[in-house]
Every structure is written in C-alpha cells, then in structure tokens.
Image (cartoon, rainbow, N blue to C red; front, side, top):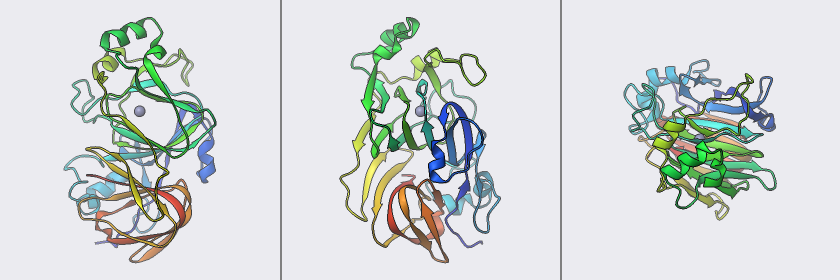
Length: 321
Ligand code: ZN
C-alpha cells in the first residue's frame, strides 16, 4: 500500500465562448483563448485530471479509482463500476452563459452512463453590479415557459439575482439558471456533463454557428414548482469554524475560515475535497506538509486520517453524505 497523501491534479482547461483569462489570477497556466472552465478534479470521459504531486504523479483520477477507489473514496464515496461522484471546477464567466437546466438522475433522456447534475456555486469574485439568473419567476409553468421560448422572450420568465463574492448558491437539478458576465466561481457538482440549453441570446458559438438548443428536454426536466434551490450569504462565520453552505444527496459543502492551526481528520466514509477559495497557508498530514494558495484543490483520501490547516485562508470542504 502506498503512503496516502493529499492529491493535487493538473487542471483541464476548457475554451468557452463565454470564457476569459481570469483564472490566471490563481497562477494557473492557461492555454490560448477564452478559457471558461478549469476542471480541477475530474473523472469524466470529457475530462480526466491527472495527479501532479507525489508518488502517484501521472495517474488519472480514473486509474486512482480503479487501483485505490475503495480505500481512497470511502464507503459512501466509492460507487462500484461508477465514476468518482463529484466534479470540481473553477469558472471564469467573462460573458453570460446560456440559460440552462440540468436533469436529475431519473431522467429517461440521459445519455447511457451519464448522471443528472445537481451543483453548487461559491462566488470567488464578482464585479460591481454582477448578477446571475436563478430560477423561474413565480407562477411560470410549462405552458408559459414553452410559449416564452417560442416567442423569444424567455428572459421575462426568469429571476435575476445580484451576486457578491462569498455568496453560495445551491442549484438542484431542474433549476433553470445561468451564470452571467463578471463572476469567478468555484463549482462543486455531480460528475456529469449534461446541460440542456434553453436560450443562448442568439449568439454564435466558437465555430461561428448558433449553438444547439434543447427545448423539449429543457421543458421536460424543469422543476416548475421549484427543486429546493437556496442561496446564502456566508460571512457570518467565526475563525476556525465550519459553516454548511450546501447540502444535497450528492455532496455536503462547508466553508471554513482558517486563522490558526486547525486539526482535522478524514473519516472512513468519504474522501474530502478542499478548494482554497482565498488566501494562503499550509496543509499538513502524517508524512508531509505543503504550502497552499487560492485556486488550488486537493483530494484527501478517506484513509488519510488526521490533517492540519494553517495560515490565513478561506477553504471549501466537500464530502459525500
Ligand atoms: Zn449549470
């Protein structure tokens, strides 16, 4: 058995029509172009990240799963023949994203092997006046949404919400949503890449053509009565304290303010994912220590045991429930 340690992965950067260069602020190396998504921890056919530190460097998360999944992912985090349950991204929304909605695991129209997508956002940075699209207006039903799409006035059906750094949004499958220009986001989601596009502002894609819309699927999967979406301000939090900012059947996400040495431990039930949202500090475990900084993400094996955070930083901690 190899000595366990926090795994850090080489991000997979994705060009998007709505992307930009903001992820450079984290010291990340970006390829040319408008980079919208950094897949930081991924085990999906559309992006598998590879370990870049320690003895397991070079192994993909899929290989880690095959070799060590049971030990590393924990009794609740390991799915037989399944993929790693979560996908962790940083998003640079330099322009508005399409209005979209994701299916639940139960949706019949899902591609083979694909899961639904419940997600959460933590706003890392927001320009003054930034907003997002978050849910339908009161009383919008399937017929009303279908008519609005047909008549090109879907924006009339949607709620706009102002955002600031530190806001957290829970977006269960079925919630119509869109990130908009001027926000940088940490996204924790089910390991899925299935998006149904409701409206794309009649904007050409990277190839100059309009991107496909998925009107029928969108109408089918939208939760018209609401799916339990919730948002919160997360600043009422003490030093070396966790605040739960999203809770779902797929992930629990907490925010912690590290201000002094903080002893923590993994449990046999689940891996721990740490996203450093702000600041700098250190991550120590039995056998090593590493300097960490904003924009870095770590997968701590369930079998790691005790670890310690220190420094001055904001950390997002995710586990499987
Ligand atoms: Zn989404």
